[in-house]
Amino acid sequence: MRVGIGYDVHKLVEGRDLYLGGVKFDHDLGLLGHSDADVLTHAIMDAILGALALADIGNLFPDTDMAYKDIYSIDLLDRVVGLMEEKSYKIGNLDCVIICEYPKISPKREQIRKLIANHLKTDIGNVSIKASTSEKLGFTGRSEGIEARAVVLLEEIDDEKTNNK
Image (cartoon, rainbow, N blue to C red):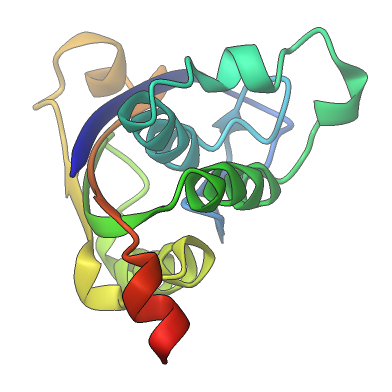
């Protein structure tokens, strides 16, 4: 088993769509970044990459490469999952928290869980998505940005069991 942690933060700005965990939210502000700036998906990718000792998403998908300009972060997650599978690992479980005052995450929590679980090729019961405010403290409390944290447990794929099925 391997464990990884991930963290991401992006500034909220006008004129951008807001994606969290691959799901679009109706919000007057979006996250600023080279890709779609989906902080939750970025934290998840960094947790997986950390568990695999493969650096971080900035290394794999640099903001200097126009191929990643405005890219849907779930497409990048699929590439990270491919790397995980190449190294013969699968998701044991994933625990995440999104920190923001607004939007409210709970109305779309299950949609996010389903989407993330599908792209991680794991059961939805292995994916936890939580939300918290920062009680109006700091940049998230002032609604200047959104942050996300993720912890992942990867399990080695037993090729012998897989090949016998």
